[in-house]
Amino acid sequence: MSTITPGPNHRQGLLQRVFKLAEHGTTVRTEMIAGLTTFLTMVYIVFVNPQILAVAGMDIKAVFVTTCLIAAAGSMMMGLIANLPVAVAPAMGLNAFFAFVVVGAMGISWQVAMGAIFWGAVGLLILTLFRVRYWMIANIPLSLRVGITSGIGLFIAMMGLKNAGMIVPNPDTIVSIGNVASHHVLLGTLGFFIIAILAARNFHAAVLISIIVTTVIGFMMGYVEYHGIFDLPPSVMSVVGNVDVKGALDIALAGVIFSFMLVNLFDSSGTLIGVTDKAGIADHRGKFPRMKQALYVDSISSVAGSYIGTSSVTAYIESSSGVSVGGRTGLTAVVVGMLFLLVMFLSPLASMVPAYATAGALVYVGVLMTSSLTRVKWDDLTESVPAFITAVMMPFSFSITEGIALGFMAYCAMKLGTGKWREVSPCVLVVTLLFILKMAFVDTH
Image (cartoon, rainbow, N blue to C red; front, side, top):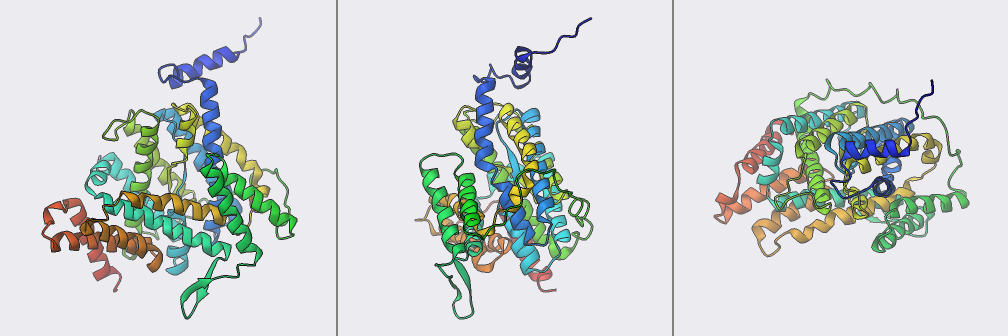
């Protein structure tokens, strides 16, 4: 008795049924191309995220694997459960805040700091379960949302310039320009302009090409050591299971936990709305089909990502590149997830990438995030002052938490001082009071 092996047509029929391709006016081939396109635009995270978290003392090889795992799992869940062409991965901004501020400046161990990210993700999940998430998005003013996004962008860009050696500490002027003739600065600068020029020409894999080119040049100049290309994934036991969830339940970390939750709230929600709008499946209010499932996947992925030690997870705006070439269903996200699983076998290649090779990517992310400042009503000081303070105080105070806190306080002060107190929503007022209490009782004790 012979067995019948399912052929291509059978598999295509299964994919048609699962992802409802015909209803969305797309095909398997189109979704595959869209998935590859999205993957190429965001795969830089497997090089950048481990390098940032390594600054906090985490095992760079283990973080490389966990980054691939959570990006793969989160993207495939988004595709299978929400049927949306949206990929997820560890969030830029939160990882820098974690490594450079919470661990570096505050002196907290990475285990406890990652536990704080975990509780921030749990808070986001609770807000999602009780449907408070979009109530907060709707009630926190645009000026503060833009200020937070832009401030994180400036913070990330500053870290990129530092990694490239473009800016260095100076006791007299706080910072100054570095040795512009050094190979770090030259290659970091080259990497940034490769990205900027290719992106301006609508080349989707601009960041990946930049990292490859600058690493290869560094290798040819003798600054990069060859470790091979393929290998079995390294062990993750130095990271997985070592997150101190209990130790993070400290009142002194309340502001950090709240900041992680708030940043992730705006980042992921805004990205989901933006990508689905570009795909033509969101309405004028930003609502889209299977929104509840998407928010659950996003929140659960964040909890899982922080628990295995790879920072909080968010939807990636790079998903819009896949949408631009026809991606309309979850099959796009599933393809992205499968490609992230394959990348785990390239760990030797990832370990060769120097910090200056990813510096350009950090500065470019800063450019993209600060571009939202154009949405601020600059002729209205009650809106522009809070946005400005939020944005600039993040890099100037070297703290995303303080930037957010001062921005909320500035908003309330400007509205109350000009008689526009009715524009201050209860949500903004409560958040501001929480930050004031934190500064009064937590930071001083």
